[in-house]
Image (cartoon, rainbow, N blue to C red; front, side):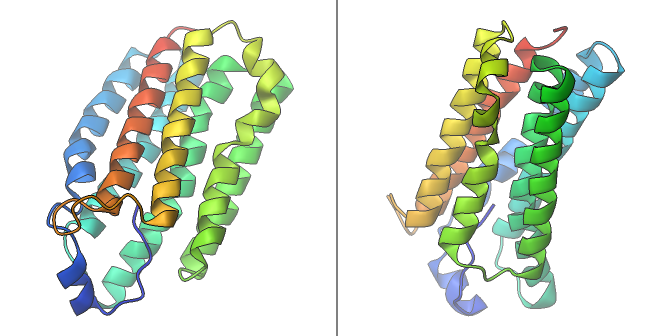
Length: 222
């Protein structure tokens, strides 16, 4: 995940904090290992597939973000890495919903949540790939709107009988949302030369993933 900057690449290189990309780079191998362990420990085909989607979308997000943010890219490659970086946020949101929809819900509620999440993610990702300079308020709002689609399923989620997993789903959503606010406001920006608002944003995304990962772990064998 990254912020769309209008400045030339040389100015970006000057302004970027020295630790840009480190959070997601450090998390990427952890995501790969934890995702593999969760998939191998899953019971049954549907649980394994749902967890694989969660792990795969998470790995895609953090890996691409790390590659894009660790150095200033120029030209067409940099442009497309930025577009993929932004589009992957939608994929991560839908991927994070998938195991909860499959393992917490059933019947029409499960299918409806999956359809809403992945339809929204597809539309959002295509839009970001085609219109990378969309206003910050619009993109942040779309991330939050898709991220909180679970509100429409509150009765079904509360009736799932898995309060701890549900609490972690909520906690992850809150952490991601706080990160989105930091992304939109560019505040707090504690040490711009070393660890700025973007790094704070990345820390909240990492914490959101950890919360959702713990929730998926609790759903094992559900």
